[in-house]
Amino acid sequence: MSSKVENLGNNKVKVEIIVSAEEFEKGVDQAFKKNASKINIPGFRKGKAPRNIIEKMYGKEIMYNDAFDIVAPDAYENAIKENNLEVVSRPEVDITQIGDGKDLIFTAEVYVKPEVKLGDYKGLKVEKKVYNVSDADIDAEIESMRNKNARLITVEDRALQDGDISNIDFEGFVDNVPFDGGKGTNFELTIGSGQFIPGFEEQLIGMNIKETREINVKFPEEYHSKDLAGKDSMFRVTLNSIKTKEVPALDDEFVKDVSEFDTLAELKEDLKKKATERNTNRSKIELEDELFKMAAKNAEVDIPATMIDAEVDHMVSDYDWRLQMQGMKLEMYLKMMNQDLNTFKAGFRESAEERVKVQLVIDKIAEEEKIEADEKEINEKIQKMAENYGQSVEDFSKNLREDDKKYIAGDVKVQKVADFLVENAKITETEVSKEEDKKEEKKTRKPRTTKAKTTKKEEE
Image 1 (tube, rainbow, N blue to C red):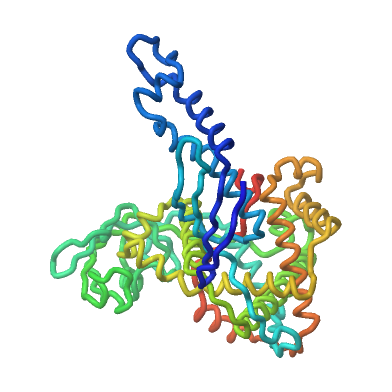
Image 2: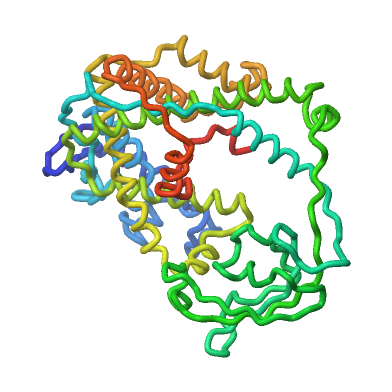
C-alpha cells in the first residue's frame, strides 16, 4: 500500500491511497467466501458453485464493493498514520480505479486538526474571585436539612396559607378556550415556591378545601410557548387538600439523627469546612477557565465547521442524556419549549465553537511548553478515581477501556496546562459578596450541557 497527500486548503486534505492488485484480490477472495452461501446457481447446490462459475454468470465485479469494504478501512487507517494526519472529520471517499488485475485506487477527503497561532498566554492579568463562608450560609444549610427531614401534616381546620403544600385540580383557558398543557389533577404545589406563573399562587391563599376559584393571570412576555406569551388567561382551580411541614427542633438530638456528630457545634464546624473546600475549588476552577478563555481569545485559528458540528452534536447528546436521567426525552422537552431540533442546536453553536477553540489552544500550549502526562501522574489520577468509587485500583482499572485511559491522560495534561497558566499569570484576588454572587448566578445561569467523557464504570 502507498499513499500521498494533497492540501486542499482550509484544513482539508485529499489522501490518495493505492492498494496493490494482489492485496485487492485477497479482499475479493474473502468477499466470495463470505457471500458464496447466499448465491444460487442452477445445477449446483446453494452455496456450492465455484467462484469462476459465479463470475461467468454475474461478472467479476459482483464482489468488488464487498472487497472494497474489506480492504479499504485498514488501508485508510494506515495512510492516516503514515502521513501523521490528525483527522477531525469523517472521510469523503471516492473510488478512482477498481478492477480485475488492477491496483485499487481511492481518495479520502478529510478535515485535519487546524494549526493554532498562539497569542499571549503567559503573564495574563486575571482576577480571582474569592467566595467566603459566613455563619448565615451554615445556618441556611442546616435549615435546609431541617426542611428535608420535616414531617408532612394534613390540615383540615383552616384555609390555605403561604408556605402550605396544596393539592389542586386546575384547567387553564385563553379566550375561554382550554390550551394544551393547561390541565392537571392532584397536582402538589407549594405556595410561594414560584413554580407557576406570577400571580397564580398568591391568589390561592385563603381557599378552603373543596373550594373552586377562578384565577386570572397574564403569561410573561418571555414565556417559552409563543402561543401563550403575553396573553391573559383564566385558571379554574379546585383545592383538594392542604398539608404543612413540621420541621424538627434544632437541637443535639436532631444532629444525631441526621449526621455522624453528637452536637450542633460539631455539625456546624464540619459544614463550614466542607463549604470552604467547595468555595476554594470553585475559585480555582473559575480562575483556570478564565485563563483558558483569555489564552484562546488571544490566539488565531481557523476552525473547520465539522469540528464545531461534532461538538454541537456532543452537547445535544449530553443534554438528552441529562434529561433522560430526569425521566424526560429530548423530543418531549422540545415540544414543551415549542422548538425544533435545528433551532435547539443553533443555541449551542457559540459555546461549541468556544470549547473547540479552547481545547485547540490548550493542546498547542502543551506542545509549545512540552507539557505531557507521565505514567506516574496518570496512575495517581486513576488511584484518586478508584478511591472516589470506593474500589481498589486493580478492580477499578479492570473497567477502563483504552479510550478511558487516553481520556485520563488528556485530563491530566489539561490540568498541567492550567497549572502552568496560573503559575505564569498576574493574579489579583477579589472577594465576592453574597449579593454580587446571586446577581451573577441569575444573569449567567444556564442548563449544564456538558459532561466529560465517561468511563465504562461511570456508564454502569
